[in-house]
Amino acid sequence: MRVTRHLHLAASGAAGLSLTHPLDCNAWLIDSEDGLLLFDTGAGVDIDAVLAEISAGGADPTRLRHIFLTHAHADHSGGVAALQDRLPGVTLHAGSLAAKRMASHDESAISLDSARRFGIYPADYLWRGATVDDVLHDGDSLRIGSATIRMVETPGHSSDHCSYLVDSDGTLCLIAGDAIFENDKVVLQDIPDCSVPALLDSIRRLAALEFHSFLPGHGTFSVQDGMRHVARGRHYAESGQVPPSLFG
Image 1 (spheres, rainbow, N blue to C red):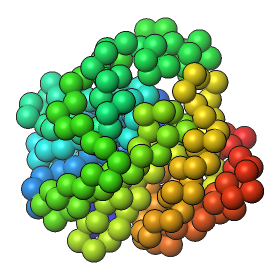
Image 2 (cartoon, one colour; image 1 turned 60 degrees about the horizontal axis):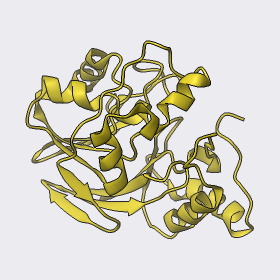
Image 3 (cartoon, one colour; image 1 turned 180 degrees about the horizontal axis):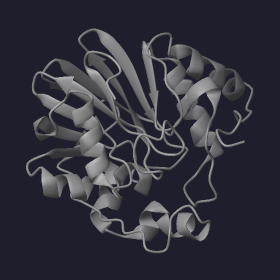
Image 4 (cartoon, rainbow, N blue to C red; image 1 turned 30 degrees about the horizontal axis):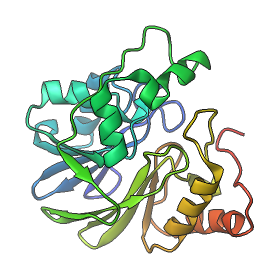
C-alpha cells in the first residue's frame, strides 16, 4: 500500500491493517534512488502476498536492495530467508544481538518456543534464520540513495530490539518496531528478555527524538505529528509506570 510518494506499507497482519498474512508485522518500504529499503519482513508464511502488495503500491520488488530488522522475533524476521531466496544479493542489516540470534537458526533464541506454547504460532510454523551482512550499533548511520538511516537501540520488548530514524527526502520517519505503538501503547510478553525498565528507558530515548512520521510494527500509524504517540508514552515512563497494552 502506497502511503506517500516514497513510503509504502509492504505487509501488515491481523494486529494491523490485514493486508497480508495474519502473522505479519507492519513491514515498511522506502523507495530510495538506490533501490528499495524494507524494514522488517513479516513472518514469511506467504511471501508472495508481500511481493504482491509491493507491486500493487507501484514499486518493483526486484529493486529491493536492503532489509533492516528491528529485532529477530518471527513476525518481523521470518520472511528474510524467503526474500533472499527470491531476490539474491539483498543486504541484511540488524543490530549485533539480533544478528547473533538470526545466525543461530535457533527458535528458542527468538522465543518462538514460548510464542508457540501460548498459541500465537501454529505447530507447523517454520522459522529460518539468516546471516546478517551488516551489523549495526547504536547511533550508526547509513546513507543509501536519497535516504539516511540511523539505528537507535531500544531494548525492552526484547533485548535485541532497535528502532530506525530515517530521513527520506527531508521527511523524518521513526520506524519504531515493537518499542511503542499508537497512542502510547506497548506490548510486554512472558519471555526471558522482555524488560520493563529497559522499555521505559527506550521510550524516554525515543521521546527525545524529532520526527514527522510514526511507523510502528503493528497497529495504525501517523504520517504527520507522529511524535505525539511517543510523547504520551514518556509521561508514563517519567513516573515509572508502564503504558497501556496494545492488546488490552
